[in-house]
Image (tube, rainbow, N blue to C red; front, side, top):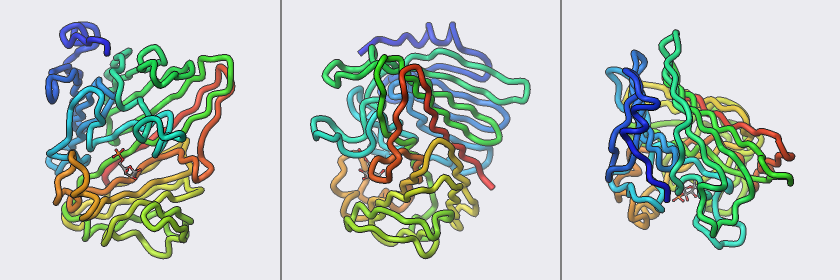
Length: 300
Ligand code: TA6
């Protein structure tokens, strides 16, 4: 795994609003801060770890038991699932792809006149363990902190053959009490229920009263996490995605995950901008083409 020098990153990209630091377990990380709030991103996995607006509860959730170990996924924030969503097709590798297990490069940072602060990180097949036999690609992930948090994943096919992939911006949201929230925006949407292995149609707003692991199909719409406990609504918009995943592990699954506290299901819900194959939403790029997956998080 490549070595990343924090001092070098600060020298090349640092500013009043962009500061690199040794994050959890010393992992190279960057903090974007401005009048809109603060975001911390780990260069390992290009992983948005936290997002906070002035005077509010954190918007993203992070497990107290998350491992911040190279080679392991970070549990919380916004994992970048790529180039496959869910289990590996041949079962040869862990779920959700290798992008969240690699050390990315920082390629740009900017402070805009409107007060927004952005950083871009990049990953190519040269940065990925050869065991994955990755086809040529380049990922560019730009995080922009403004009135909203915008995460933009660009996928470039740098090879000479078609590139097919799936994935997600697998966002974990911080809520006061998951049993008291509702997720709006998916009513009347068909879903694949990964707990019951059935299909269904969402008749009402989603409430969390059991393990929920659903892939909502043919939906490009906005979701709203209505949280009475924190007295707020988190608005989750997206583009480049026609499948939205909603997940809460609830009691039994929480106990089975070593990097997830037994009681932590009470304070989180995942609403993910995804490209899920089972929802006919895998993507294929011709040589030289670019695909894009964007999630925009704001508070109403
Ligand atoms: O997005 C929901 C999901 O696919 C669930 O099935 C659960 O596995 C979750 O992702 C977390 O996956 P991970 O590989 O990060 O443990």
